[in-house]
Image (tube, rainbow, N blue to C red; front, side, top):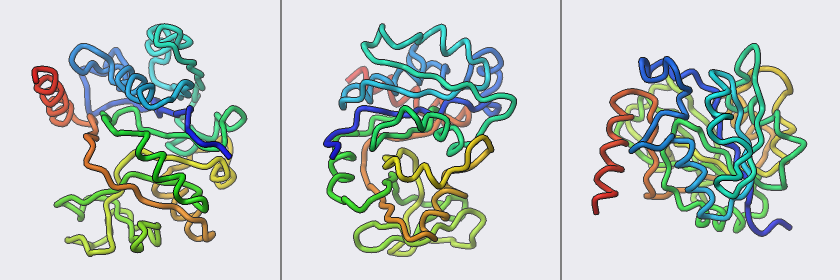
Length: 246
């Protein structure tokens, strides 16, 4: 059995329309955080926790990413690419493209999330659950009405997904918000169709739960924040600037 996870998929095909004009000429994952592309932050953070091989899906301005990172030699890692044309294949569809090259277990992270997650601890929790087909970072927030939610049991096993709009104005004790960052067992890929757009949270997760698969949540206080809007991007930039001053 695989005892550690050394592969990560970083979903990088998004258009970044909410970050224009910054993304007029660069992909969203190339937006700089304290002078360094967010995708580079991802690679360095995963590498700290033993990941040595990366899979990056491309769509918008793909050469900007490939020309900067190449095959990953500069970072002492291996980088593989997949180009999605003419349309983006969605968060799950992009993962499916890498199926022939993936190990038994692997990480998945959205490229527009800034993450300082301790992936070693997350993997440790995942391996405590040998029946798990996957695990996802979950949490709590004060705006559940505009968040995707999941019902969980006392072991944080997923029971039912409630995607917005769902009518919940407060979080119940057995509910968490879906955050970002996954570990998948390769068996989950059989539920993803090939060559068509398919979504992780709205299609894949409800489908595997309906089939009785075991999928778990992982709670952490590690910094994890999306840069999907200008306001959020500036908040992350400020946070990292302050962190580097300490």
